[in-house]
Image (cartoon, rainbow, N blue to C red; front, side, top):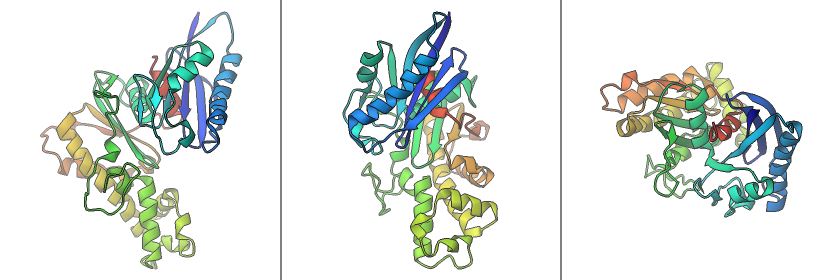
Length: 319
């Protein structure tokens, strides 16, 4: 009998789900819009739809679905499956997602923070396969982290460990995140922060000699993807913005190396996919801001599970 696992990735814009075999191979993927601003019942129906489709497609006496792994933005308690107040899922606040899904399918359900799950997937079948202790960092719309020790997610006493993106790195910065911490890493170095900083420069008319000037009439429409494309065309100001993000994350990583001394650091997310412009500055800075004499031997590598990483991460809870 084939052992199968369903992995569900609940995001602010879409719900992706896949069914995997016990070696971590995705056999099928289904995707629907989350409809995150609709009532709770609508959002749950979207989640149930992708799970139902996968179960129906693989209904067979020779298949046994071992369980359903679910990952979504925190804060949440993975021990109980309770979601609290993730900004991108307002109608799912304060529900027990584990019990809700389990009761609907009579299958074991595990729920995990998306960054933690992605880190587990990278150590199980991704860039850190063969290692035991890693720090996973996703740099995208926000910044999330996962700490994996002895191939297990470190949750802390209350299940909230690993919120590294919400550590204050510049307490004098006036930008506040939804976490309420002044100058947290996410507020100054995420993809959202890079785009916001570019828009501010455009409004201040400081981009006349830059490709960023293309957005002079609508600065708020610029995205980090636009900035990355300009950087690939050697636009100095765009490169500076990406390197500033990499510097801030690298300085923070130096402290993380001091604290955790991991086997490896894996960086995922859309900003990390920019490549050498981002990684070269990040690596140089991390070494500058750590006193760990062996830090140069700690690999800092891009994630290899960029596509469907949430599905892999959710399923990894059962692997």
